[in-house]
Length: 176
Image (cartoon, rainbow, N blue to C red; front, side, top):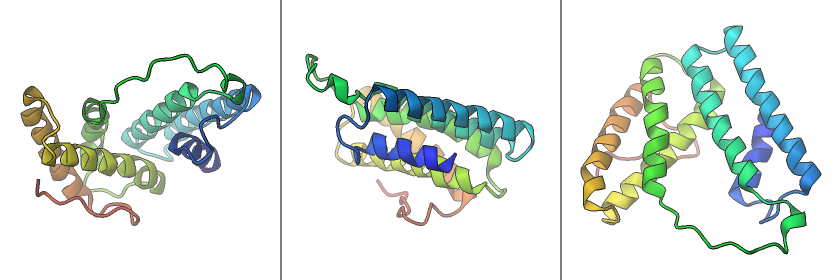
């Protein structure tokens, strides 16, 4: 499961280029990711993880599946006839945190599985850093500022109860 997830991370990060696979490769990785998603359900049912940890992992892996589905295979390299879409990181980060924080809050105070620490906490800290940067740079619309500050404060409260961030991520301070 970790190898499949690592492969998806490489695809999503761009390490494998703009066209990271051919049609067959895309079908293969999506099949492996779906199998990993099913494995999470089975392992959660067998109590390898707490139900909340299983939900967090499924949420994270579902996002990876969605991202990989959005990547184009090498056969589509010459079919570039689209209009670039505006990327709005704040609403995406708030949406992801809105899904993950309630589940993390239920787990706060207890030990987290290594996979949850590796995958879920990493994305939570990255989303938190994105929001803090947008607030600091005043890049939010007026109606988004206060709700974003509340999400940041809630994330800090929950993350403080969980403990230190993954080793390769710096802690995100409470300061804006």
